[in-house]
Image (cartoon, rainbow, N blue to C red; front, side, top):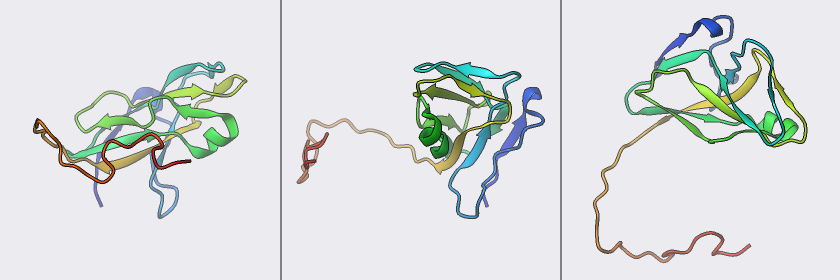
Length: 147
């Protein structure tokens, strides 16, 4: 199993570390490390701290994604979904929560606010060319195959 280093910041000391909830889970929950309740008004967004910093192995990233339960039940999403935590980033992991509902969202300390998924990343080098190879699809996109 792959290992990564993680550090709790002072304001996250009492919160759980990210962990898989089931044997086949792809994501690990991230928790709100707010000192007091954080109110996000309808249509607004705020950066929510997790109290964690990490050192991912070279060639990996962490993606921060919405939790389906929050999306369905409260209209909450991650604004820059998926947010990327690069392997060389050493700052606090933050989650930009967006309130799509019609009522205030109250984020309390320890709330599960997002999920984090670890992915292997391959870097490429672009080679500029005058023409691209053709395909049957070509430039078709944005619903070109119908409804």
